[in-house]
Length: 111
Length: 116
Image (cartoon, rainbow over all chains, first blue to last red; front, side, top):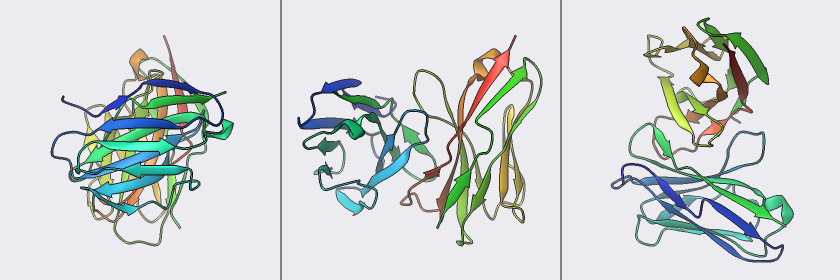
């Protein structure tokens, strides 16, 4: 595909459930980022991959959040034991040089 | 630490008028990049314009221009001849260093509404 894709677009989870969010970056993009965007706010950095290496995970809010990119392409953000405060839009972006290209996001609602 | 400040939570502008969205930033790194993104109600983040800290001229992309005042640490976005389709959230953002490996820090955004 031409752009970054994310799935699912919408996810509703009961508190305590585990969820997995997928990101397909633009082919050939080395850098991949995950951001969390709460309602009415700007995106906040979660973690960064260069190829398969997770070089920065300083933005992950707790050890319930885990991200991987095992083959340097598709990435998965996993949230264990979801809580209501995890409700947000999760954005994935990929980059080759300067610009970060964002996917449409996954809107997670935790009930 | 990096910080982006957008002081205008919302703005209303008449169609065809020019509009300036304010952005100030704070960083101790001499090398950084500044971005503006547009986020319509559909949710996607659309890249508009980029300015590197060492760029001598202000960046322009069609109707968008970035008024870069380095000494004042401001990077205001100017949209000329506004259109109804410009109604959206606008985020100013910064990345320290020029590397694609650096995370982007976003401001809180400005909601722009264009009146017909």
